Length: 233
Length: 276
Image (tube, rainbow over all chains, first blue to last red; front, side, top):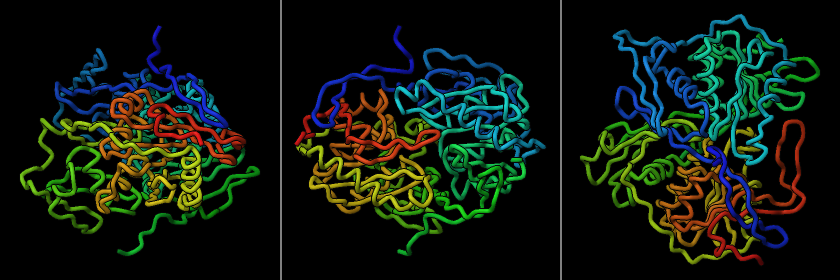
């Protein structure tokens, strides 16, 4: 069967000499999202978990507030038709983390290590992963995508569809964390994000204000906490 | 132009040996940068604040909103905002039938002009594999912001003798290309005679930008996607991935892998690469 995420291609390997070889590379899928019949955006994603991706993306961007705001979602031929529950009241985006979660540093290391075990990455070195962990020690969901934003949207969507209490979760990511990644966590009330990569000035500012803990450069036995270290014990 | 800061030391906490201790951490600067075209806001980019003029022009060109510098009457920077006036003053680029939004793998929503057609690259440039390795080495040697923050992508423009023409670092890999392509427009560089080196994955949008610019060769440290490859083949671009020079380091979970023997993978357009 043809894979939805890998494609076999020919290339020329150049080192000492040059020779023809084949390998798998990742496939991009264009997923068109239409809301109420109107084009909202076309996302370039790694196929899989499309439902989760759409729910996660819409809540992370503040388009919806809960899974119930989506009346229906049908996906056919990579075109997603979303119908929202009509409402007149303006959405209130969560601006402050409300959580008493504290997590052991040793668990943070395990969270990041857990999402790094990716078969697709081992084969292609071209995908990002994200994970959602209850109390920092129970794996709820791991997702992969071409983009770290998309991978995070997928695990957030999983949480939404499975009624996960985000205030008790740790999100893990393989990538750098610019402002939009932190905003996604803030918007759904995820108190801790752990990453192998680093944040930016803007993301640290947002995290400080909103109460998000950023643990970066989580590698081996070391990490750097950029904001709200009180959650790591 | 005043020199713009690209990183800042912030107060963080380092965890080792079971304890958190205060530490100063170098963090890359991310800034919101709105672009107005003919008085209407087109997009707000998240970028590292360098090469703002280049970025603006490169973005408009790469997304298909302009085809050349001649279509731009003026470009002004006010309070970290770009104000662009086009020759066609009625063009606001927000016409719903022509503008679309795409969520790109580098993150964010990106506006693009859907009628943009990609030209075929006709350059007869040929470079040696040594030139490619040399360019990649120079990119890493000059990546100062990466050394400070570990949080940026880099891209460099080289001539066929492996001399560096322009190098940029930014939080986004798309931004690095926009800045370089804007640089070629502003400085009237013949894109047919140069090549690009990047640290980023070559997904479809990245390759589309390069093909639009006419630059014939892209060499990246990392991978290409199926759609990136498809677009590259269609336009006659040379795509080289996984350029690993001797001694280059790859971070894995626990340790650092060091490349012993230089290698690269040519995915398409191999005729432009000489093996000597």
